[in-house]
Length: 247
Image (cartoon, rainbow, N blue to C red; front, side, top):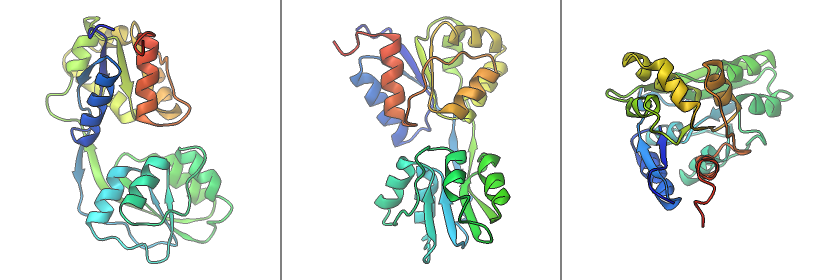
């Protein structure tokens, strides 16, 4: 497969971006690395709770760096990647929902959290589905913002390429990456052209919430993997964009 199959990736500029570039290279595609999220730690650590919920690998790493001790709490991870990060940091994981979403976690916990203090430690862009759902189940919900997610200065190369019809595919890994991509396009005065370009390309969304955000903005989504995992997303997107990549 020729390297003109350009796939935009929006992961933060750390090991996640490097791993994504390496993965796309192994699939025979050219990665257009355009980070749409920059992590800014707040310096806070998870508060005490009978249940403590972590929703990302980044949050786990920041909690561990802060010396967080669960002190007998029921530790909950929103998905397997977060659970793996917790285990790698030396924590035991008690709850991982079958559906790796806020609503999936609420469903698992709804029957047992009434009257319990539930600590949710995450970014400043966490979904209200989680906190509202737990509160409706009768939990005393407290939220700690471990980090802020901002759009990096200078981001938007992928929006320019999309507007010019030079992208074969794009991989959105959160609703916020969709919003920041569109903000970058708007900043350059090419929002509509960028959306039109994406709609001529293969667009992947890591899960249903991301798909819904993209489609609400007029972006047609072609790929949503069954499991919210970047490797699965990238493989399915490249396979859809260039079905012979593995030959």
